[in-house]
Image 1 (tube, rainbow, N blue to C red):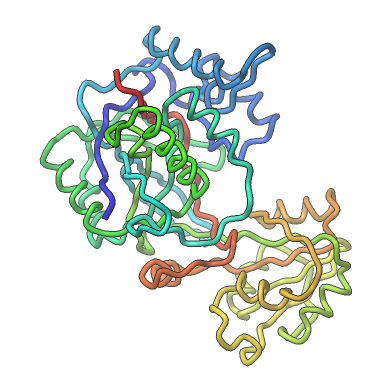
Image 2 (cartoon, rainbow, N blue to C red):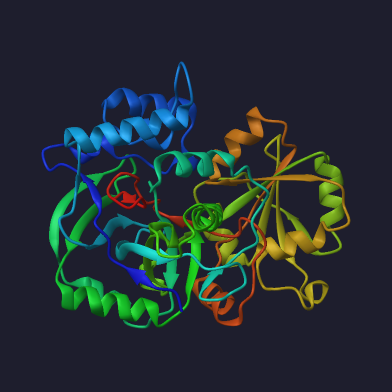
Length: 397
């Protein structure tokens, strides 16, 4: 099983307002979002995590900024190794109040297929150069991978408050707070619980793959297996219903007409007229056991799976669609949020969208226990973790 260890975290000094310097993860930010955050504060984390440079190498510029912030005391290093409790308070899409907690530490980077750290879905091809170049330049982990632990009772170990370092409320009303754990007995208990069980990657598959590449490069460069690159910054919480809010990632289709798409789906789904997409569509999908097909014109149909046509196929909407369209030429894109899907339908080349239902936590647990993989973009874990609360250096000082 993988090691999970405390480390001497880099954190913004206490008199800096965290709301001004933390940001959503880089992969959900547009150029406009990045500019707004960079303008908000000269020390906002996007200056390092999404670097730009008018002249020269942007990644080296990011490394220079990071070193300057450490030198100037903008970022302060913990005196001793610590874990960080990360709590999120919010109301989920069903109206239920949620209070989830996980722990940020350093998770061992293991070889692909070695076990211990498991993917939960197949990944789509994605350029890795940007994150790898940034890691090479800064020799640091700037944003955490999100892991799910099969350690029963982990949440109970994280419930007790620790040293509160700060909290922010994001634009969606989610309260993010971080607490530092330095008590050695508690650190030992948390580490032992996580190390005794596999960790399933929920979000950040590509970041973990980058960590593996960088670890291998570092081993070759240093002829050592004892550097900071052997581990990577990771947030871990327990894989149980109470600790997870899972949304769907919907599908947008191009390279196929709405009529062709409906025809390809008709042998596998009962297709019935539906009202236009509205606030109750997702709840109706759950009640009906149906997916929802939406045309660019707004025309809408229910797609109800025909059970016998999916014999041997996993009980996942994403798997149903992958199976039904396996022999049909098409292009698919992925988008979370119904409003966002409708906007994409109106403004992009997409000819149709299919809204799917969220994957259950029980199915995610089954995926982990049986070593299975879901189709790409089957799950959207929310709320998204903020970048900037905790940074991890890998270089030896």
